[in-house]
Length: 311
Image (cartoon, rainbow, N blue to C red; front, side, top):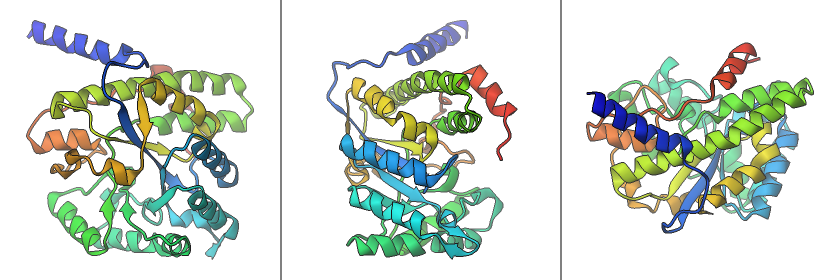
């Protein structure tokens, strides 16, 4: 038992301290996705233009998932927010459905959740149609696919009938914790905390990539075309260039979600889970395998997150 514990810690140590450098492996590929459009933790009018500029400049074909409730004020559509989504499409980026109000799947019936999906497609379908595109992707809120197997299966049937493709995630992370602190520090003009967050965020994401690369290889015996989850927030808008540079150092090429899903790994069955796991972990659960939890955020980041309220 002591030997197993030692081997596990050696393995974990490799994950935590793996540097962001090019490896002697074939080029890696990743599709970048952003949840909670038009924005989370900040003003969409400031966040989306920055993201659009950086993604277009770096030729990154990202997909954004919308909560259409954020497109309204006082039950009226806010045209400037809808226009931002048109700008997103004009930059060659894609859009998908992320439910109307980011409802928690564990707190509503499957029928109520279906209505959230239907309500969440009205404006997005319209602006996709204007661009000659169709609504294709649905991203589960909090990456939770259903509290029970029966719920999950009924929801999958509904999504298939609606001609949706589920948008999975293989590289999950707790980026939202960093973004929460960063947004509040920025509002207070607390540059010291902002810098502290950024200086921790990029190495953390590097560690996350190393973790899921190794998990992929251990389970699949190769690294699939990965799908990264991010959010449309001030942290990423301000520091996307640095994050993209980290991925490039890890030898990643940027591909579309369509291209990523061509990988055979996405045909594997995914298990029902009560947590928002990566699909790699879900594939492992479906095989009856134990899974490792992803690396945690640094302790001081967790403490700052607890210190600041959500609203």
